[in-house]
Image 1 (cartoon, rainbow, N blue to C red):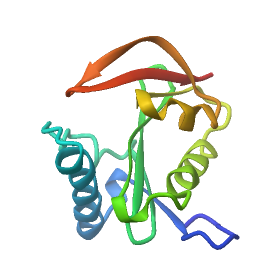
Image 2 (tube, rainbow, N blue to C red):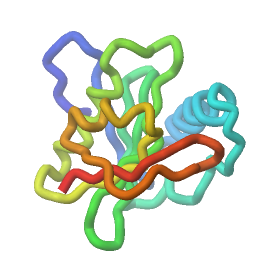
Image 3 (cartoon, rainbow, N blue to C red):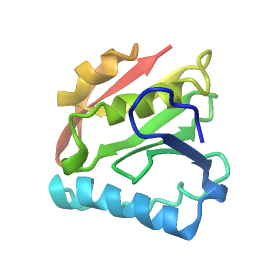
Length: 147
């Protein structure tokens, strides 16, 4: 458990091999609810990365918001699967998770593929777009780096 001194819900973190079955279920349910059902984007959500020891998962207690970090081959951290349940939006939960995730390696490079409408959100954390927008599963994305 990470220390959270203000009134926002606590942020929890675990490596892929440290998750309980109930935590994996809650994570996958939230991601499917947001990406597959709400965004109408059928894709293989279970990608084989979640249980790797090198994968770090961050969530707000109650699983209202979530993200994960994958290790890139060059040492960069890849932030992905950032999502917040529809009924939990507007409370700063995703920002809370981004802050906690970035604190795990402030000196390392970070990369993510943002839905283009969310570029402003990630820019608040020092991410800058690189390259051209691209289509991923029918949704416009852009790669963003924090070096």
